[in-house]
Image (cartoon, rainbow, N blue to C red; front, side):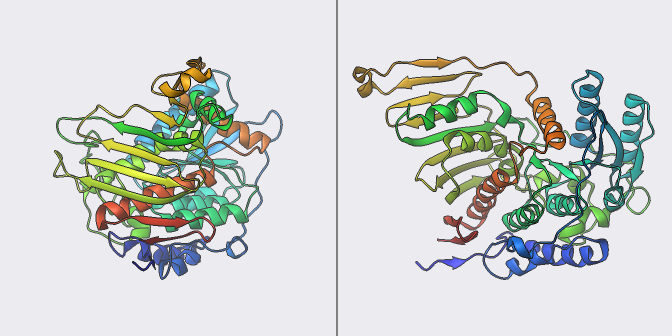
Length: 450
């Protein structure tokens, strides 16, 4: 079968329009995503590093100075981050202040402002247009907790504004957007970008990575993980709909639609966008990235090069995205990973790495090695690495980001790792909706349907 380059998104032509629209909007607003539009007409690819725009220099945090942060997106995740950063500051774990907030929804924005002002005792400025927040020279870093279809545009604009970025997962909605964002960061390497996949902080994963590197398990043959949960009514319905939301009055719906183009007002989409395939990859991007990211770090198998997936509506037939998905991923060195995701059954796969000589079990807090039967007589013995209880791994991830803002160290779960995960997310989504397997070439950063 001939290998034809794939279009940017199999679900519709919205990905191409996303880049064209973002490029047009950026021409007026400061950042340029037009380079991504070129990729939309051919293979999935990002612009060369030397073609990506250069932005403003970052503002270094002085000794003893608080990290001054802005938060873009003040819904459930954004407000949760605000509370967490304020708690870390109160506990004396980091000197950080949330000084500005941006959101298209005035009721959410006002609630977050009250939360941050009462929690910090300072004035917190608010903006309906996040670009106004990015224009401020006194802000060191931003946390982006907007819907997936805005991540690339928000992230690129923040980088070009000279701000360090904590970007909620998934890193972007699709692969073209990820490759563009990667190119922008590579053109501005002094900017810190950390993706919000906090499970990479769990000590069992670096412990497993070291055992794999040391050859303890022999050839790492294949691995498995999952993220499964259940509900009676359907997933993501716990995001409530506020009847006070009024587009054109206290909510800028057109701005929310943004890169994907205009759409009729729909409070269900606004509140529960994870259920809709135009705005989210559902289980894959929202849930599975949490478990795939640390496991790919542990197996250290390079870039994903082949992805095939299936999905189905088993119970929640009202949800547009699938409620059951299964992925098979092949990496550069031949390693295979099996990943399952469900929002209609909570019993998942045990997280483990299977080697020729033995297996690593990662289902609990610790890392446990059990040799294969045929190698026991060769002296291989069961081994358990006791791993520290780090507490709230999200807080550890936040603290790591702030440490990197101060020291300029490269963060864990950086944009390179985020792009590797987005290869899986995007190609698995294509495979589910269109059928077939998809390949990715890390040398040319292009993908195609086999």
